[in-house]
Length: 134
Image 1 (tube, one colour):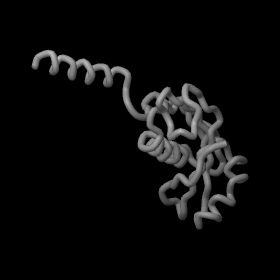
Image 2 (cartoon, helix red, strand yellow; image 1 turned 60 degrees about the horizontal axis):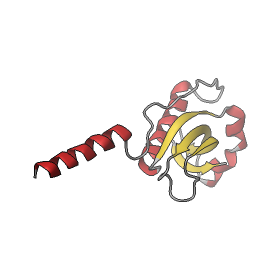
Image 3 (cartoon, one colour; image 1 turned 60 degrees about the vertical axis):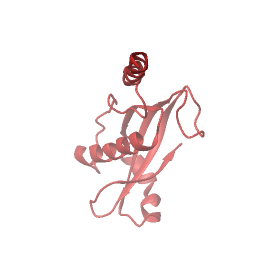
Image 4 (cartoon, helix red, strand yellow; image 1 turned 45 degrees about the horizontal axis):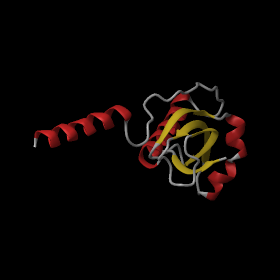
């Protein structure tokens, strides 16, 4: 019985050290100047994606995320229109897909760079993630 408990305890310690699921705790961000959005609005969009990433990107580690810039958001205005929203914001990120990461559509043991996250909102409401990718 002691051996079984010791083995279970070892597994618990091992998993706590290597971690499970998606990681977002040490994500690098940049303060990108914007004439369209305040830093609070950009931070809110980033937090939306961090939550999305933590919930749905198992085995992946978000390394960096930041506002793509005003021009990028203007280029994606059609996403707001398609989603019956007023505004769109585009974020860029880099993330690592671990050995068992992703949903099968991503390359394992690979770092994705300049990955787009598209979010929309209406009347200064909450940001909603509507798409991502290259």
